[in-house]
Image (tube, rainbow, N blue to C red; front, side, top):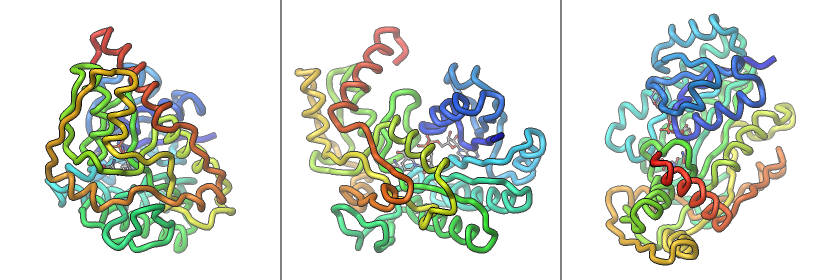
Length: 320
Ligand code: NAD
Ligand code: SER
């Protein structure tokens, strides 16, 4: 039986991945933990929560022992935009925190460690279209540097300690349960909330900015499919490209206008433009498709319809 510790469970992905894992494995078998509390009622009532700083190795060990943990999902991170404001914190949480997890995983014979990487591993020198699985990885952000280092660390622990470490390079994740936590792709989520609430949006990147994106149901599916894949059949481990869709802000805004004809958008690029410009337009995810059967379900239009429906209902209830 799996006993899972999710670290960083209160964030954009953690909130929904934790609830999905609880549906599959039982609420009491999935321990949510984070440095901060969640205001998501569904997360709070569906299973145990522990306050945890990933930098505190002893505290992680105490939770492993208390809950007989055999699987760790490490989602604790400082994302790209916040990371540029505090690069040392990004390194500490994303790398020193992850090293704590890896060392503990070896010592306490943890069966699986899951940690996401990101399209932020790419940078100048990476082909812009269909960025290959194996390519130049020279990111220009501290966040990207931590993600490249994290992939290499994971692979090192696979080789040296035979530890089961898995991860995938999420594109920008778009969702409607918990707001994103300080990334560059946050605009692709904010635009839907602003469209519903105000009928207009001021975007912090230019209209022709095109990035790989993915809707949360596909993000959850990719994560679970990789967690459940036969480890012995994996050639890659912590660095799978996963694609779903790729669109410019202008295309996203035009898609929203199909459903909210009066929606307007203006552009005021800030420091996040440089970050976005350093990432590719799309990724080649054939390794994920071949090694564990990855296949996304949502395209831009299907996602837009669902986002507007869910956020629209929340808005009517006064929740957003
Ligand atoms: P998020 O910022 O929404 O959540 C991260 C969580 O980590 C937060 O709840 C935060 O409180 C917690 N955290 C921060 N410092 C901590 C510490 N010291 N100890 C314990 N918890 C701490 O991020 P997310 O979008 O949910 O990202 C989850 C993972 O997915 C990260 O590894 C991120 O790099 C990766 N990822 C996310 C996206 C995306 O678009 N959301 C894209 C690519 C990769
Ligand atoms: N969505 C993330 C960010 O923008 C990508 O890893 O930081």
